[in-house]
Image (cartoon, rainbow, N blue to C red; front, side, top):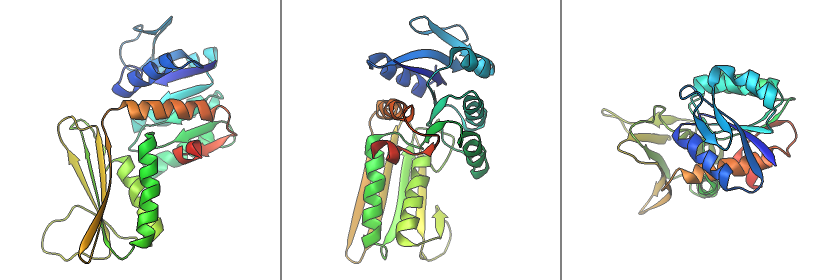
Length: 254
């Protein structure tokens, strides 16, 4: 059995990940951490541990992998502690700065294997592949990225949208990115990015390619967060067999 620990265990994503672990036939939840609800039962004999005790609990229980869906500020410390104790990682937290990503990668490299992705949905990873193919052919078209999420999401644009922008930049050679538009200005050779925060939208991402007399839209819509949870569990199953290093969901899917 693969022994799994989950941070943000009482959050929306953490709870769904635990449900996926419960349904699996090859995984066992051995620890759950959250900044609230210490002592609350999670699954079987496992109860919520305080986040401050993470390193102590990991050292004692020795899980095979830790799945993290928390906040960027919290996840950096979590990743560092897990790497130091030899625990592999699946990180679905978003909103990291470049400095935070570099700090995590330094802690991981040479010690453990980690899958870090802004989106663990299988469909989104196919979405990124389709974008690369379309952008290579339509690099002279105007390109706009529009994303929409629920009104409680703090980071904007979403990590998925930013990953889409990187795909588009690499495929087209366009370097200029404009976030929203205001005032009297002509569109240049740029990628436009727009973020919507409203209601309980789980996650919508659309990339618009517009050229002479036509437009093409490539869209992904998440109907449920379960798509992210099942992908994270799939990544956890993969990462325990991987060599030390930092990977993404594309590596998991082959």
